[in-house]
Each structure stands twice: as C-alpha cells, then as structure tokens.
Amino acid sequence: MIDSNNLATVKSMLDRETVLALISHLGYSVNRSGMFKLRPEERTPSCSVDRHGKIKDFGSGWRGDIFDLLQDYYGLSFQEAFEYVATCLGVYHASA
Image (cartoon, rainbow, N blue to C red; front, top):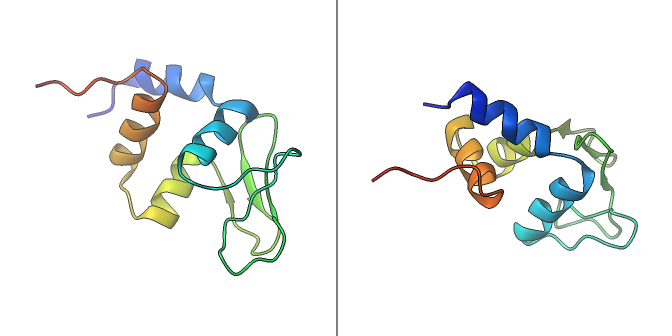
C-alpha cells in the first residue's frame, strides 16, 4: 500500500531534471536539450519533459508523468511504478 505522505514526497521531487535522470536510468539516451526517443523506430528524439516533470511525446501524442510511462510502456502497476521511482529517489525501502 502506498503511504500518502511518501506519495506526496515523491511527487514533489519530480521536476524536469529528476525525471530526465530517471528516464536515463531506464536506458533512454537523453540529449543535451533534454529530448529523447521513446519509440525505437524514431529517427530523431520527439519526447520532452517540462519543468514540472510531465512527459510529452510529440510524435505519438502520448503524455503523462513518470508513473504513466512505467505503466504504459513497461506494464507496471501504479504500486510497482511508485516503488521503482521512490526507490530510485531513496524514499522507499521495502520492508522485510
């Protein structure tokens, strides 16, 4: 179960730089202007992250946050997406 305080803490940390770091951690190549290819068939990067951490793919029209990306492109549940992001940010520690 997601603790609402932890969720608020994690969401407050998701600015542009943090989301780009998470995207890079997922294996996407982020260029100097913060653009990246979400779809492998792209010739040029068409995704960007705004200052609030929202992701937009101008090629397909997809938009969302890092949780949506993990759910839509990796098949994770919201709980799994939250745990991944929170763990990367050092906020979540699975209990034994």
